[in-house]
Image 1 (cartoon, rainbow, N blue to C red):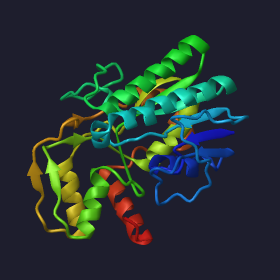
Image 2: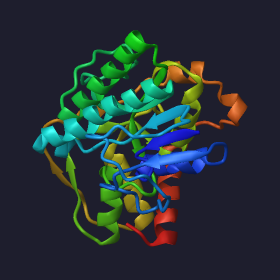
Image 3: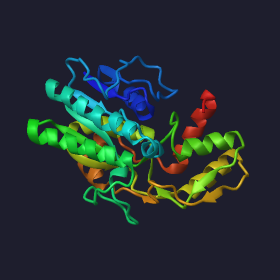
Image 4: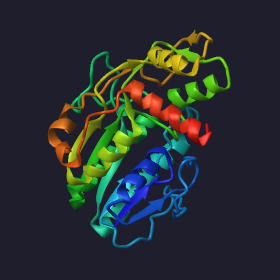
Length: 293
């Protein structure tokens, strides 16, 4: 049996959809930020002050987190408790059950760089959110050294797709569909990875050990994302360009070569990452069919 924390959230709901084909799945989610696409049953627990009383769990996918960089800066205590203390409690559960943990980390743990970032790049976050993910990683590695806890850590780049509430892409889509103006802060470049790719690769991470970047390895300008969506949606307002926001990295592209060399992707029929144009089309198609922003 497997456990998914944050299984009612954006990425967690896709992971559940993939995992339920092969496993019995238990979801823990405090429903502070459920994805509107998820209607699955869950155990409602606040992991920041509770160690779950569960049995017969072999794999724990720990995705529950407060993911907003902006909120982490305005309310650092809340972010740290939700992310780091929750991880500590999940680690205690994993230690008791002798379960392996697959942890969703973030590109935010890295120091800013103008070049592509591999797993050996300097770890120096510029936000409380990034620091909370780094401290969670360090706790996991300490539990491995002290107690032999098995783990796999995945550092996600920018995940997008239908069901996301936060981030530049759902913001652009929502505002374009309601004909509102759009602000772009600086000239950022991001490594956008489609959520269904993330769910599949996160699921099979259970068979591997170590730390891996989960990304496409390709940078896309936010302004290009704006242009692609504008063309598809026939949105004709120009963006309002502002200065970069505090705590946000200007360029973030992750080297995924370690994951691609290590994970046996042929066995799962891997056909490569969904490109940004196709991913945005799929996202918009699902928004249209479900009429949900």
